[in-house]
Image (cartoon, rainbow, N blue to C red):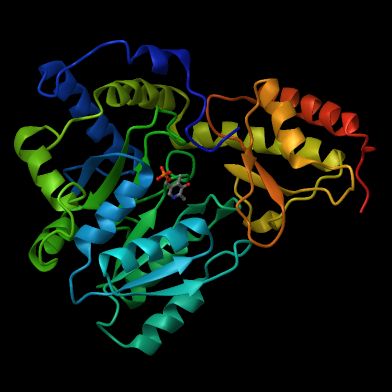
Length: 373
Ligand SMILES: *Cc1c(COP(=O)(O)O)cnc(C)c1O
């Protein structure tokens, strides 16, 4: 019940039982298929002017590669931030010396189009070259209005490029690169696409990459050079440095399973069913959600810890994990909480089982259910 790395299918794990070298033609063919399928998952293609660049490493490496490679030395990013991942983008910019400003919200709020427009207007034309945001904020489990932000930029600030961290959105929430005016979308292998960790990827508008190549003043990092990685993949079909071969093989199987499930709509529907199962059961026991229903996504759900003298989170965590259910501690500054991820190769019946164990465990602590205010 973690939001990645997460539970994967047996076939995904079995796909890793082959050792390929970096230049093996069979591996390069799998790479090619994976890159093509990822473009399809973002509702675009190479013919339409989009590219898929794969980077080794965790999702953050992909975010750092995009921020560090596409914002010119005299450019400036506006970061819309409502949780730990927006903060992380600010930290990356600080470390890399990228000029930025942020609109900061609380971690129970959604980012707002009107605040962005106000900020861009006050700054005047040319001040900000990029806006960057999170699609689904995993900190508390909030869906941000990506489409509305993209369309508002297209209408009022067409030269400002939009970067989106869709790590925990992509594959389960729709993302239309072209129709929604997204220049760069970053996600990783081990979230909604249900692969194993090892790499992340950026879906990029080719014109944006070409512009970045001309204007970025050179990469800020060798290994996290998005443009360099793209040029090399185009020229040789290979990674520049050791590829995550097993992770790519696993991912190839994972994306076939995603397609077979009905792509974004099918995967999203299963996660929503998981979420609804969890929500109903937890509310019956008297647990309270942290995020208001209208902003809540169905990827991960934050519950407030009960304010009962006998409540003991560490004992709760351990009792669940002893039975094979690993949950996620909360990341909120404001209140003690915990989170249930509803993604991975998990079905409503898995969450029914989780709920039984939660109930047992709370009762064993000597807490009466349902919880009272
Ligand atoms: C998981 C996640 C990341 C990246 O996390 P890594 O630990 O670097 O893989 C970034 N943004 C969001 C919204 C995420 O959910």
